[in-house]
Image (cartoon, rainbow, N blue to C red):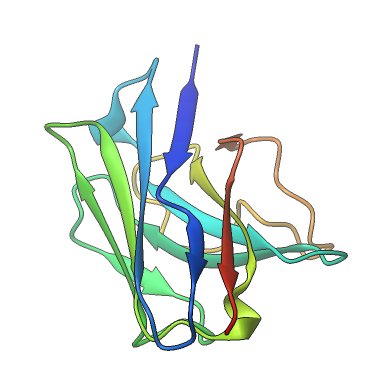
Amino acid sequence: QVQLVESGGGSVQPGGSLRLSCAASGFLFNTFSMGWVRQAPGKGFEWLSIISNGGGTKNYADSVKGRFTIDRDNTKNTLYLQMDDLKPEDTATYFCYKSWIGSDVGKGCVLRSGDRNSSCSWGQGTQVTVSL
């Protein structure tokens, strides 16, 4: 059974940093692409970033490019999201996900409607609040 558990969320002032972690179990971690999405209050899911199974390919949404860095440690079955220069508009619940293949480098786990694709597996989320 796939299990994804996020941690590392919290409250931070604008300009600050947080590092999210996602501990994975129940599947062969190093064979699937992994990613992050977020959901602000009252809004749909926003795709943020994805990393291929071996870590060689990383893609980012324009809204976080240059500020967020995705990474993974396949020896620890853990996915990370380093978030720097945080802004109030980054306030949201952050979710990690497991894609359906290892070569996925796109946004397919979030549908155009803003809903999550049920073909992907999802964590329960961790809250990030950016305010003075």
